[in-house]
Image (cartoon, rainbow, N blue to C red; front, side, top):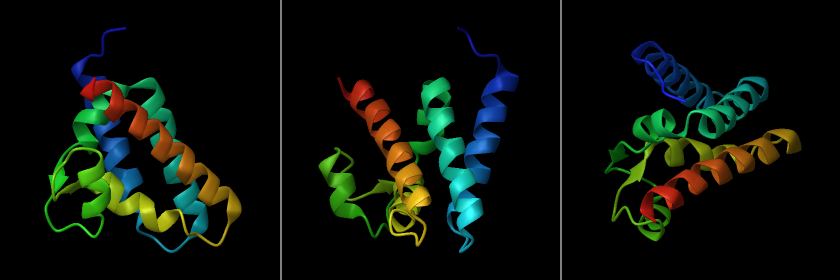
Length: 112
C-alpha cells in the first residue's frame, strides 16, 4: 500500500509525540506511547524507520546501538524506550518490550 505525503507526515507527528510521552513520569502516557509506537512500527514500517533511525551521538545506550550496527550512536527511540522497560507498571514494561521488538524487526529487515 502506497503512503501519501499526508500519511507520512501523520506518522512522523505521532512518532514525535509518542517519543515525547516516553519521557514523562506518568505510566498512562508511557503506556499510550508504547502502544502507539508498536502499532506505527507494525503498520507503517517505512515511515516509522525513517523517523526513528535518526541518530544521536550523545547516547547512554551506545553499546546497544553498536550491537545493532550504529557505531557509537543510537536513535532517539532507543534512548527513550530503555527507561520505560523499567517502569513500575508491568503492563507498561510489557508494551515497551513489544514496541522495542517491533522496532528491532524493522531494523533487522532493513539491514538484510
